[in-house]
Image (cartoon, rainbow, N blue to C red; front, side, top):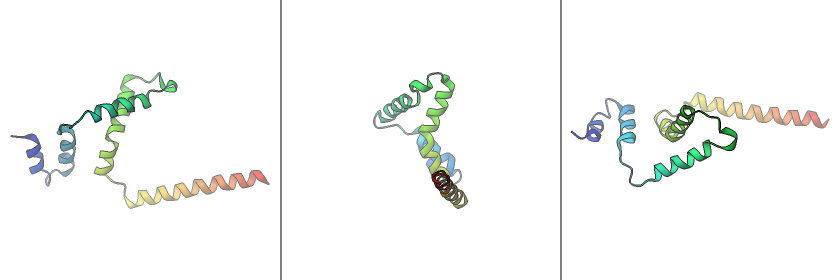
Length: 104
């Protein structure tokens, strides 16, 4: 049995696992994922970050490569979006008030 057909048939029962399986088991058409990973590794390991252990670099690259998939699978709730919006505006107003106080 084809594994992709299996997960396509089971996507109503296991929607999250089916989506992950489709992403993991699909065959890429080109080597763009490898090139992207190589580019991301160059951006992760910089002159200032040369002492990172291999396991930490692997974890960072894994998270970076799968971040978009994770966001698709579990989008933020309305409450989280509101918290982000209020925290962004509160830090902006705090910075403005500090600058205003310095000028006096």
